[in-house]
Amino acid sequence: MVAQARIPVRIYFDGEARNWHFHVPELHIVGGGQRTHDEARQAAAEAIAFALESEPAAEQGEQFEYLDVAVG
Image (cartoon, rainbow, N blue to C red; front, side):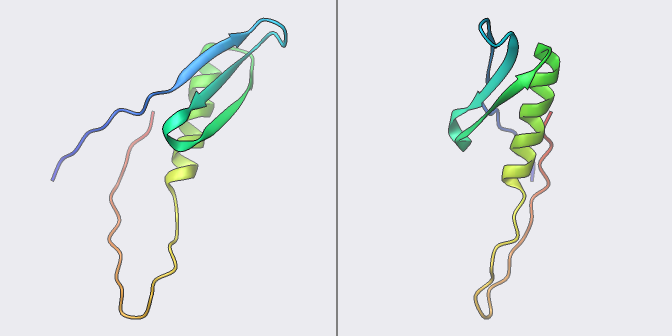
């Protein structure tokens, strides 16, 4: 099984703070304070990966399968 998806990320420069920020609306992630666009992009990828990692509490008898997802 192969599936590919794209997650929209808004990366923008804050002229007042003089650094870069990011917003991932689909995952309700907001971050920033990076010095460069590339650093903000990397921080966004790390935030997305962190948000997608989870250890759900399994109900008795339930089994979970994990899908590998590459972010970056």
